[in-house]
Image (cartoon, rainbow over the protein chains, first blue to last red):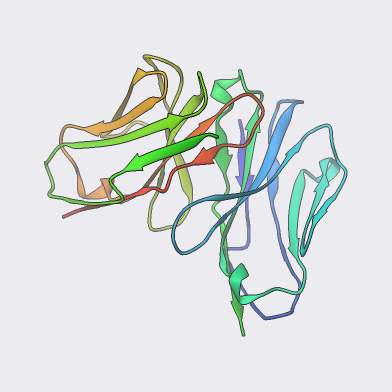
Length: 117
Length: 111
């Protein structure tokens, strides 16, 4: 069965601090995909990144970076030099193969990040 | 380009009344479609998914049902709403190995 755990319910930092959001996943499939989404106060879900299980290369996009480690089943997200606009709820998600149960995304409980000026 | 429309944005309904939320996708064919609910506790719970017209899979037993009468139309319904049906409902679509794309959501309050 698929499961995603985001142990950090809330994180509060001061602007310009670095912050890491943790994500641990469980799956029996050898092919799977991991995602991060951002949910600002408006409620819409904004896609940030997709990673497949065969690509463990870390990725950096501006102030955002992601660390994927299959050995620990983790897909952590780091924001460098955080800004107030980064305040949101962040979700980690997992899906198995597209033709396995509709490729459904299973989400973690989310981490609410508050960046104070 | 692909877009997803979900309406209404907000809805206040009395207990025991029916519900119909609609979601349509444009710019893609044969997508997988999903309904999620986000309760006050913030987690996103998958309610239903559909891999084709008339094909509905339910993830959790509940007071809701879903239908897919057309390839790019996904409807969430209830015959009689309960207080516990209150929440933020999100429709999403996906093809192959892409990420899922979400609608703007419907905030439902059952009073």
